[in-house]
Image 1: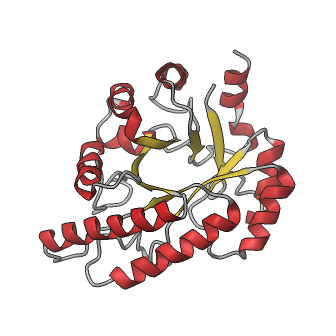
Image 2: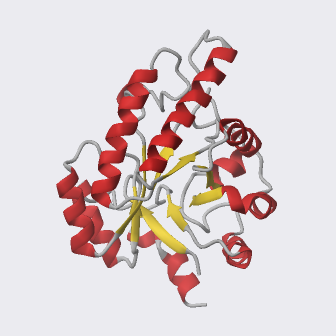
Image 3: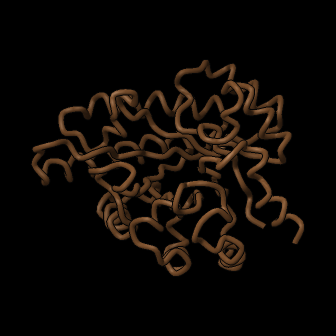
Length: 260
């Protein structure tokens, strides 16, 4: 049976953020993830985790000015110092929250940037982050994002991410495999998981179209969950979807899975 983590950025939006921890625990989740912790004091987040017996599974490195449309700065030449400062801040939060893996959103390719300079920047930034996180006992993940939802995102396909991991050459850099993004860009979910399981440290899910809960779209999630179990994946699966209605009303897919 997969271990599911509630993505508190997307789930339980009926509640203020700090109240979502308790709601996730009441709904049966034992792990949580979310995009960013940096708007909250580390101590407040750690207290919510401890009070509800939750594991902090994942959060992202700082990703630039999110409100202005930035989706990471790892591919932005000239902002390496800002990226490195963000790595340090992310480690501080991860250590306080007991979070053992962090994801790097590499960002939208800057307009008119030299492709070679962008590539060098991504590689150098990931090498720096992977090394710094390894010293702290934290894994670094990198995630392809579909370019329908985020046009121009630098990293958009599994093969591209795996090639980048190979070039970086760190034993502390892994693939974050988001089923929704992969389905939109390339499909072949089952075979891709089977071929690359040793490089995958975290999985996320949502159905397509709509990015809603499993069972609302084209993906055969009951089969996928059995497949993931048979492959021997023992990590977490983050529920990073937008509920079609209320969060609680959309959790029937987990209840059905538990009843099997």
